[in-house]
Each structure stands twice: as structure tokens, then as C-alpha cells.
Length: 283
Image (cartoon, rainbow, N blue to C red; front, side):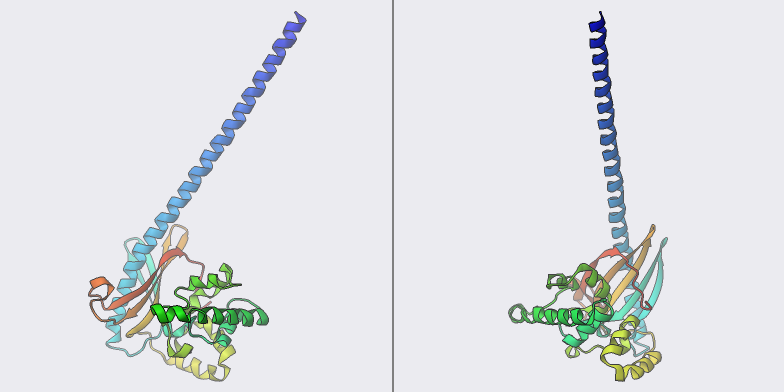
């Protein structure tokens, strides 16, 4: 009898252990399901935010470009200008930045790239100069591609990640100050009068003797836009995030561009909407 009770007690203990393991397993399974659901919800919110930013951003950019073309017939200037639009319940801030005021990754001399990496990228003098040399060597090695296809060097700022020693952190630090392709032209020279204000620290490093004249001319510029190449940024708030939609356009392009569109500009490149990291022309 005593042995039977001991056996039954052991069976009860095993049963309790099995139940506890089952409950623990179910708890882990439920926790995993809840976590997956939360991840799915976050991803859905991200996709929805990106889609809304793209739609609202593109609409606001079109309005800004139309207004810029209207103003250009009255004012002869192409300095940066900013507009705010309300599309339904969405407020969109749009800024036109002349590409001539940005640093051309395909044409900028090594000294200018080194100053950019030093001042805006946060590298030290030695690392900035070394990386600038690697960038120039990388784009020069693709001259053969340019001769064969008409396109060489950097095609997007993200191509910098293919350069040895270049990091995503550094790219994010400088992406608002660079252009690729034909860009600013002029043999790599930057029109500092039209450059974003944070880039003036690079001008102080590279053209210190001209800085006073540059600042004086910036004060005299009128906020209008004329025919030329622009980077256009639209900032769209969705929920607790601000999204950025970026287009690279040629304003005043011949009609019939944009795949047959009669709009008076040509979209060169359109970047996927992404979460805004806090860039400001005054930062």
C-alpha cells in the first residue's frame, strides 16, 4: 500500500511537471505570436508612412515646381527657396536646393572632398585626406565605363558605400551636401552663394579669401527659382515621424520629358521616401 501511494505521488509529480512545461511552452509561443504581431504592425506602419510620404511629397513637390516656374518669369535668381503646403490633413514642407550649390562627387577635387569629410563627416585630417584620395581613385578607375556607356563614376550617393573605408554613418553625415552625375558642373567648382548654410564651413576651409564676398552675395540673393538643376526635398509628418521624399529635377526642361508629360521639368532621379534624420539648412 505504501509503495502504491509512493508510485501515485510520483505520477502526480510527473503530471504536474508536464503541465508546467506545457504552460511554459504555451507562454513562450504566445509571447512569440504577440511579438510577431507587433513587428507586423510596425512594418505595416512603416510601409504606410512611406507610401503616404511618397504620395504627399510628390504632390507638394509638383506644386512647388509650378510656383517656381511662375516666379522665375518675374525674378532672375535661383537661390534656395522653401514652401509649406497643406494637402488634406497633411502638412508638407518643400525646399528647392540648386545642385550647383552642392559638392559634385564625380568632379570635386581631392582637397574639397577632404574638407567635406573632415568638417561634415567628422574624420580627422589624416583619415579625411586618405579617404578623399581613395574616392578620387575609385571614380577615376571607372573612366572606361564612362567612355563605353556615357555613365561612370558615382551614379547615386549610395555608391560611396562601394568605396573602401566608406561607412553608412559617414554617408548619412554628408548626403545632404553632395550631388552625382553632371551635377554642379564647372569642373567641380561649387557655387557657394547657393550652397546650404552648413556647407559654408567647408567654404571657409577651402576658399577662405572669398568667404566675405560669398556671404555678402548670399545676403543680396532673392528667393526665386529659374531654369536649372535642383534637388527638391519634401518633409511629410506622419504619426510621430517625419518622412523625406527627395527628387532631383531639371526645371525648365523641354516639354515632352517625363515620359511624354507636358510638365515644364524633368525628373532625373527619385529617391525612396525615408525617415528624416533631422537635416536643416540652418544646422
